[in-house]
Image 1: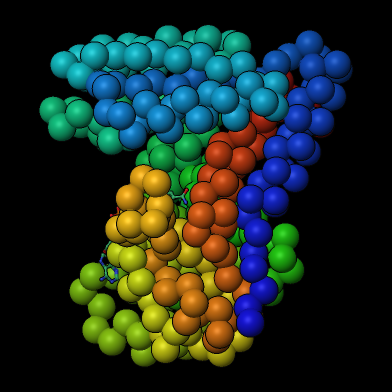
Image 2: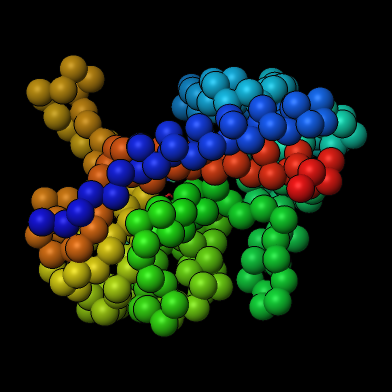
Length: 293
Ligand code: NAD
């Protein structure tokens, strides 16, 4: 059976390392890292994500700041709030909770986040640099960064290996493919128009799936011995669970376990890594802005 890649415990370890580093930074310079979160509207899921990010900040010693704007705000009002945080020296990271209300232009808003505080790594300049050889983004998007961190911490060799990324979203699939390529994997991207996705995926030594379809990736898609990182979070009906549903990934876990050499569970795999990477990006930002180490 495949080794389980325990994102929950790796994320805990990373949060402990971050908390220790924050104490050192504070003792040496008096500086406390700060993260500002901008939430527009009142989507329940977004509110939950923002609350969890705030709690995670507090637990490691990052100050969190929040701006809640009404659903019917104008783009200018959101940008004004971002500009305020850009100019605030106690804020080292700025995160705009997505999705934004439909009447807003996401690109204009993400463009207004100062790149040196773009801890989500969604600014077009940071994404552009991620895709260029010989350039480095100031920040890498948190979920794909968390996938890479899991591969690194489990000693998975990437250089020269074949990798397949399933899904090509701006926040997960596309940056995950770029990151694997930057570490010298040979990368293919499988998306909703790909013919024979199973045949292509079966060539991969490393599979990262970020689609949002339960059990899309069957055991037969996996090359024996491959490493599987499952980013998907999908609710499926479950009468036995108190909520009436449970969460599963994109990968049929029971089948893949029999073929893969290592796999992330859902939940407890990539999920906890995303917030850990956000905290890590915020700490690096504070260090960089204040020239620490
Ligand atoms: P998205 O909907 O923006 O993108 C999905 C991608 O999958 C698209 O590029 C699309 O082309 C591709 N796709 C759709 N159907 C396909 C198919 N049948 N075969 C191959 N490709 C197909 O989603 P996203 O924001 O990238 O999120 C993907 C999944 O990851 C979701 O389940 C989401 O909940 C989860 N997610 C988890 C975390 C985390 O922290 N663990 C973070 C972000 C997203």
